[in-house]
Length: 217
Image 1 (tube, rainbow, N blue to C red):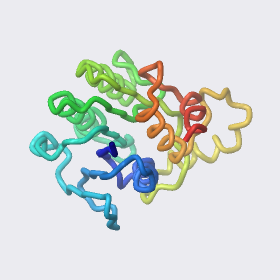
Image 2 (cartoon, rainbow, N blue to C red):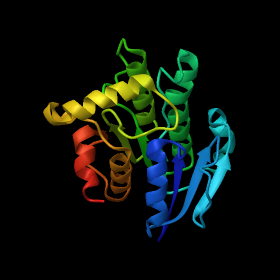
Image 3 (tube, one colour):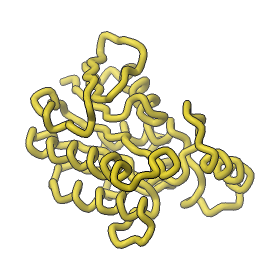
Image 4 (cartoon, rainbow, N blue to C red):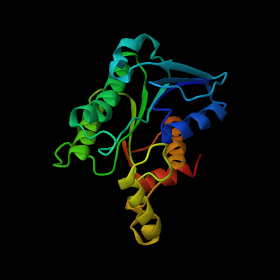
Protein backbone atom coordinates (compact mmCIF):
# COMPACT_ATOMS: atom_id res chain seq x y z
CA UNK A 1 0.00 0.00 0.00
CA UNK A 2 1.53 3.30 -1.09
CA UNK A 3 1.68 6.03 1.52
CA UNK A 4 0.83 9.69 1.97
CA UNK A 5 3.31 12.00 3.66
CA UNK A 6 3.01 15.54 4.99
CA UNK A 7 5.93 17.97 4.95
CA UNK A 8 5.98 21.12 7.06
CA UNK A 9 8.72 23.43 5.82
CA UNK A 10 9.20 22.19 2.26
CA UNK A 11 10.37 25.67 1.18
CA UNK A 12 13.36 25.42 3.51
CA UNK A 13 16.75 23.89 2.88
CA UNK A 14 16.23 20.41 4.36
CA UNK A 15 12.52 20.31 3.54
CA UNK A 16 13.29 21.05 -0.10
CA UNK A 17 15.64 18.08 -0.37
CA UNK A 18 13.12 15.89 1.44
CA UNK A 19 10.34 16.84 -0.98
CA UNK A 20 12.43 16.01 -4.04
CA UNK A 21 13.42 12.64 -2.59
CA UNK A 22 9.85 11.72 -1.64
CA UNK A 23 8.51 12.69 -5.07
CA UNK A 24 10.93 10.16 -6.59
CA UNK A 25 10.15 7.47 -4.01
CA UNK A 26 7.71 4.85 -5.32
CA UNK A 27 6.55 4.03 -1.79
CA UNK A 28 4.68 7.34 -1.68
CA UNK A 29 1.56 8.19 -3.69
CA UNK A 30 0.95 11.71 -2.34
CA UNK A 31 3.03 14.42 -0.66
CA UNK A 32 1.02 17.12 1.13
CA UNK A 33 2.76 20.41 1.76
CA UNK A 34 1.65 22.84 4.45
CA UNK A 35 3.44 26.18 4.24
CA UNK A 36 2.90 29.92 3.91
CA UNK A 37 4.46 30.10 0.43
CA UNK A 38 4.63 27.83 -2.61
CA UNK A 39 7.64 25.67 -3.44
CA UNK A 40 7.38 27.10 -6.96
CA UNK A 41 6.68 23.96 -8.98
CA UNK A 42 3.97 21.35 -9.39
CA UNK A 43 4.00 17.55 -9.47
CA UNK A 44 1.29 14.92 -9.88
CA UNK A 45 2.05 13.53 -6.41
CA UNK A 46 2.17 16.95 -4.77
CA UNK A 47 -0.67 18.74 -2.95
CA UNK A 48 -0.02 22.24 -1.60
CA UNK A 49 -1.89 23.90 1.23
CA UNK A 50 -0.86 27.55 1.57
CA UNK A 51 -1.81 28.52 5.10
CA UNK A 52 -0.76 30.45 8.18
CA UNK A 53 1.25 27.80 10.02
CA UNK A 54 0.54 29.57 13.31
CA UNK A 55 -3.07 28.49 12.76
CA UNK A 56 -2.33 24.91 11.76
CA UNK A 57 -5.10 23.51 13.97
CA UNK A 58 -7.71 25.22 11.80
CA UNK A 59 -6.71 22.87 8.97
CA UNK A 60 -6.80 19.59 10.87
CA UNK A 61 -9.38 18.08 8.50
CA UNK A 62 -6.79 18.16 5.68
CA UNK A 63 -4.00 16.97 7.97
CA UNK A 64 -4.39 13.29 7.10
CA UNK A 65 -1.42 11.10 6.20
CA UNK A 66 0.69 8.08 7.13
CA UNK A 67 3.73 10.15 8.10
CA UNK A 68 4.52 13.74 9.04
CA UNK A 69 7.93 15.33 8.51
CA UNK A 70 8.45 18.60 10.37
CA UNK A 71 11.34 20.65 8.98
CA UNK A 72 10.31 23.94 10.56
CA UNK A 73 12.94 26.11 12.19
CA UNK A 74 14.43 29.58 12.42
CA UNK A 75 17.45 31.32 13.98
CA UNK A 76 17.86 34.20 16.42
CA UNK A 77 19.45 36.29 13.66
CA UNK A 78 16.45 35.81 11.41
CA UNK A 79 13.84 35.98 14.19
CA UNK A 80 15.31 38.07 17.04
CA UNK A 81 12.04 38.42 18.95
CA UNK A 82 11.66 35.65 21.54
CA UNK A 83 7.88 35.45 21.22
CA UNK A 84 7.89 34.88 17.45
CA UNK A 85 10.90 32.58 17.69
CA UNK A 86 9.04 30.36 20.15
CA UNK A 87 5.89 30.37 18.02
CA UNK A 88 7.97 28.94 15.16
CA UNK A 89 10.39 26.54 16.84
CA UNK A 90 8.03 25.34 19.58
CA UNK A 91 4.50 26.24 18.52
CA UNK A 92 4.36 24.79 15.01
CA UNK A 93 6.01 21.39 15.75
CA UNK A 94 3.93 20.98 18.91
CA UNK A 95 0.68 21.82 17.08
CA UNK A 96 1.59 19.34 14.32
CA UNK A 97 2.32 16.58 16.83
CA UNK A 98 -0.94 17.27 18.64
CA UNK A 99 -2.92 16.96 15.40
CA UNK A 100 -1.03 13.76 14.54
CA UNK A 101 -2.16 12.29 17.85
CA UNK A 102 -5.76 13.39 17.32
CA UNK A 103 -5.86 12.18 13.70
CA UNK A 104 -4.21 8.83 14.48
CA UNK A 105 -1.08 9.49 12.41
CA UNK A 106 1.48 7.16 13.92
CA UNK A 107 4.76 8.51 12.49
CA UNK A 108 6.11 11.97 13.35
CA UNK A 109 9.66 13.07 12.55
CA UNK A 110 10.88 16.50 13.61
CA UNK A 111 14.18 18.35 13.30
CA UNK A 112 15.40 19.73 16.61
CA UNK A 113 19.01 20.61 17.40
CA UNK A 114 22.07 19.45 19.25
CA UNK A 115 22.01 20.91 22.75
CA UNK A 116 18.22 21.00 23.07
CA UNK A 117 17.34 21.03 26.76
CA UNK A 118 14.21 22.41 28.48
CA UNK A 119 16.39 23.46 31.45
CA UNK A 120 18.99 25.30 29.37
CA UNK A 121 19.72 28.96 30.06
CA UNK A 122 20.24 29.48 26.30
CA UNK A 123 16.86 30.51 24.89
CA UNK A 124 17.11 28.60 21.60
CA UNK A 125 18.25 25.39 23.29
CA UNK A 126 15.55 25.75 25.94
CA UNK A 127 12.86 26.29 23.28
CA UNK A 128 13.95 23.21 21.33
CA UNK A 129 14.08 21.19 24.54
CA UNK A 130 10.56 22.23 25.51
CA UNK A 131 9.38 21.31 22.01
CA UNK A 132 10.94 17.84 22.28
CA UNK A 133 9.43 17.29 25.72
CA UNK A 134 5.90 18.27 24.69
CA UNK A 135 6.01 16.45 21.36
CA UNK A 136 6.87 13.25 23.21
CA UNK A 137 3.91 13.80 25.53
CA UNK A 138 1.63 13.26 22.50
CA UNK A 139 2.66 9.59 22.58
CA UNK A 140 2.78 9.11 18.81
CA UNK A 141 3.88 5.52 18.18
CA UNK A 142 6.83 6.30 15.93
CA UNK A 143 8.30 9.62 17.02
CA UNK A 144 11.83 10.52 15.98
CA UNK A 145 13.54 13.72 17.10
CA UNK A 146 16.56 14.64 15.02
CA UNK A 147 19.44 16.47 16.69
CA UNK A 148 21.81 17.49 13.89
CA UNK A 149 24.89 19.66 14.23
CA UNK A 150 25.38 22.76 12.11
CA UNK A 151 23.51 22.22 8.84
CA UNK A 152 25.72 23.02 5.85
CA UNK A 153 24.49 24.34 2.50
CA UNK A 154 23.45 27.67 1.00
CA UNK A 155 20.23 29.38 2.04
CA UNK A 156 18.36 32.04 0.09
CA UNK A 157 18.56 34.57 2.91
CA UNK A 158 21.84 35.88 4.27
CA UNK A 159 22.81 34.74 7.75
CA UNK A 160 26.24 36.23 8.46
CA UNK A 161 26.76 34.38 11.73
CA UNK A 162 25.94 31.01 10.16
CA UNK A 163 28.12 31.79 7.11
CA UNK A 164 31.13 32.50 9.32
CA UNK A 165 30.47 29.39 11.42
CA UNK A 166 30.16 27.22 8.30
CA UNK A 167 33.44 28.61 6.95
CA UNK A 168 35.33 27.61 10.09
CA UNK A 169 33.48 24.29 10.39
CA UNK A 170 34.55 23.43 6.84
CA UNK A 171 38.19 24.04 7.73
CA UNK A 172 38.06 22.36 11.14
CA UNK A 173 35.66 19.51 10.30
CA UNK A 174 38.41 16.86 9.94
CA UNK A 175 39.65 17.42 13.50
CA UNK A 176 36.29 18.05 15.19
CA UNK A 177 34.79 15.02 17.01
CA UNK A 178 32.26 13.29 14.73
CA UNK A 179 29.39 14.15 17.05
CA UNK A 180 29.87 17.87 16.39
CA UNK A 181 30.74 17.92 12.70
CA UNK A 182 28.52 19.75 10.22
CA UNK A 183 25.89 17.78 8.31
CA UNK A 184 24.32 18.36 4.90
CA UNK A 185 20.57 18.94 4.53
CA UNK A 186 20.37 16.13 1.99
CA UNK A 187 21.86 13.72 4.53
CA UNK A 188 19.21 14.75 7.06
CA UNK A 189 16.45 14.32 4.47
CA UNK A 190 17.69 10.84 3.55
CA UNK A 191 17.84 9.85 7.21
CA UNK A 192 14.28 11.04 7.75
CA UNK A 193 12.99 8.75 5.01
CA UNK A 194 14.91 5.77 6.36
CA UNK A 195 13.55 6.41 9.87
CA UNK A 196 10.00 6.63 8.54
CA UNK A 197 10.28 3.33 6.70
CA UNK A 198 12.66 1.28 8.84
CA UNK A 199 12.39 2.82 12.31
CA UNK A 200 15.16 3.06 14.89
CA UNK A 201 15.84 1.90 18.42
CA UNK A 202 16.17 5.45 19.78
CA UNK A 203 13.67 8.30 19.76
CA UNK A 204 16.34 11.01 19.76
CA UNK A 205 18.72 10.59 16.83
CA UNK A 206 21.99 12.51 17.03
CA UNK A 207 24.28 13.96 14.38
CA UNK A 208 26.63 11.05 13.64
CA UNK A 209 23.81 8.51 13.80
CA UNK A 210 21.90 10.50 11.19
CA UNK A 211 24.88 10.23 8.85
CA UNK A 212 25.09 6.49 9.39
CA UNK A 213 21.35 6.00 8.85
CA UNK A 214 21.44 8.05 5.64
CA UNK A 215 23.88 5.57 4.11
CA UNK A 216 21.00 3.08 3.88
CA UNK A 217 18.89 5.44 1.76
